[in-house]
Image (cartoon, rainbow, N blue to C red; front, top):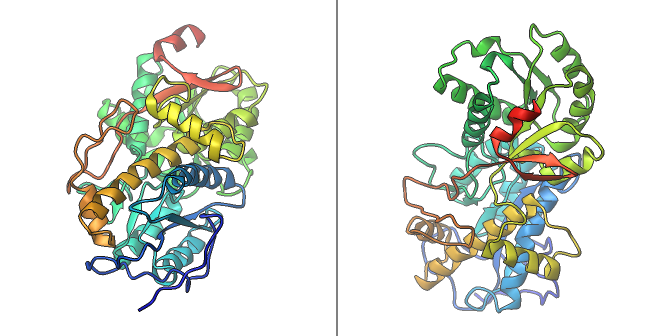
Length: 403
């Protein structure tokens, strides 16, 4: 059957599902015509959490633009169809089904969020569609043994929380001096459960007594959370926060007046660049664990990212989130090349290609290994601290003098 498609000046457009209705669900090899490879994404492109989705998308687009400028994958351009879910699970479900059934995408890449992942993972399983490099470290994505249709780029929230808890204990903050602010959804609980697991591994069993307060997703309503923290039975020395940058920044500004000696700690999902901007002018002790290398690290991939961001990034500044999208796309394209070499660029074939990856170097001084029992590319967690408007690498021992 002859396949028609429009000539597109820009490769990254939301297009009619009838244009590239390419069958990718079976294990047959694709036709030899050089039609584009269509990749899907459901993310927050509007609403309070839009910065996260926009930056992941930006990083993916930058790398895809580079690949397309160099002829594509085996002569085939990459098309990213990014649908807006506003960080709301219901819309994620609609988008995932639309991408799978109407757009017939080869895979989905870079979806943002834990509550949205709880919807997208079952649909990926149902449609036998690869969900690659989701921007979340939640357990629903990081199961052991792994889900065949979920391949992660980043490390888990459990790994980030292990770093946070070990770091706090190393500077003599006791477990009973820790409190929590949680986004009131699956993301908040995923981070909290990771922290509880880390505390229990450290020998602390009275975790149910630690203060917890919450705020509602996609709002800035944190005043009650601050009041609840003030009513707690302890004065916390460390507040672990599982949220996104805008409400977290507001909470820090309010809570620091009541707890001036507290350390405020976040996982990478918070969006550190946006958090630093939101906290401009403050001098609080704010820590974010990163799962990407430092933006100024002397690494080949960082140099490549900065160069390509300048060329294809529409004037955007370097950011941990767009870096993650960029490196995620780089690894994903490696998988496309491997599958294409095997003449198996199908939904199943690309997963098979990833599961045969061994000791892959993408330029960040961390080798990547996949097999059927390991679907997590990166394992390293790097603590950073806010200083002079930017997050810089942190050595926990440096906080002893700053307590």
